[in-house]
Image 1 (cartoon, helix red, strand yellow):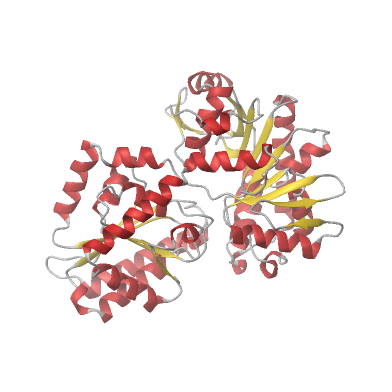
Image 2 (tube, rainbow, N blue to C red):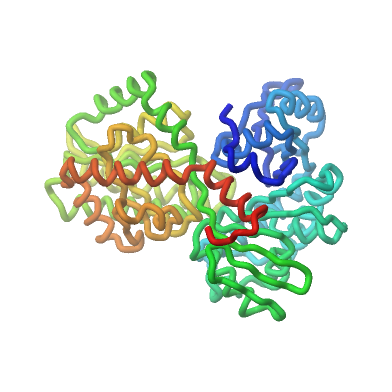
Length: 486
């Protein structure tokens, strides 16, 4: 296991308590009497597990099931293996439906991604959201020590800090939002806008992915709340309220660059990459990897690819889009409709342009193991990321880390948080501009190898310099140091 950085170890934090919607494990029932426990993938676990393991920390979250039998023993065993304590929050199916699928994903998710027309502002969702946030806070209050630093994550748990304060807890508490934060004219559509702003100001540090998100939040609180003094002159802003000083900053999350690059260069990935190239010979591979979600702009991507084939005849038979869609929320009607739209577009494009030895779009609807994903990253000549709005989009960074040959091109939506860091060498596009994205595909296809390598080398350096461990350091530095200049 990778050790926490020297900078983090020097901070005045004794023990860390992480609070997230889900615990960092996946529970799968093997049969009526047995569960299988596996660590969850993802940057958050990768970054925080070493720190928790070294300091004997605590992770609070929903275990992913409403069943309670045998969980205590399972979680105790998993805690021993991980080196830190897993503390479950028990939620009923109704609470999950109302708080998670309801308020979190039918209100906050679309609103914070500038898609207000997809919101369902049901009052019962708000009631459930408050109740479940209170449940999380009660578990934290029951297990946290006085000197613990409590770090709450993401849009599902924005009220936890307020609930902890109402219980009399005086611990330092931080919050990080992994999604975008919307501009004022979008945010004010939220019926509970004042309650959530006030709740976020109960934290000691509030972190966002980008300066744009931070500035959106600061403008909202300046406009809507009274009695605040905001100093936004520095990288980490300060807000003075009658009760406390809050630090507000942008801390772009990232990946474990070294681990991605190391695995991408492994013999098993090299062999899998060779097999993929042999299966799609004499063509440039354009790769899309997206979770099934309307914020990812998958239909727009397919329309742009079709436009490129229509307008640039020399691409036909010479370029192939491999579109991987990772299943998500398949029981929700909106997501079922999105899946049907994607599959319809794939069928239309292949029906119109396919030739005897060339299929323009290879479509997969499934999750990939890490080795297979890395092989696709290495095999791809072009990465095509067309998010309509994204907090960060780690695929953009994973592609760079895995591109150990330094010969890929990245086309990246300007509305992804990653665009701010990668804009110098990725080709930025407006995903709503179908012809503009098609032009970028054609530009990438014809880009000289020297330019490809120069761009990718700089992209890789940027991602390596600000990896996921830098992210942890930067947030905790804001929480525990007085110097706010960086």
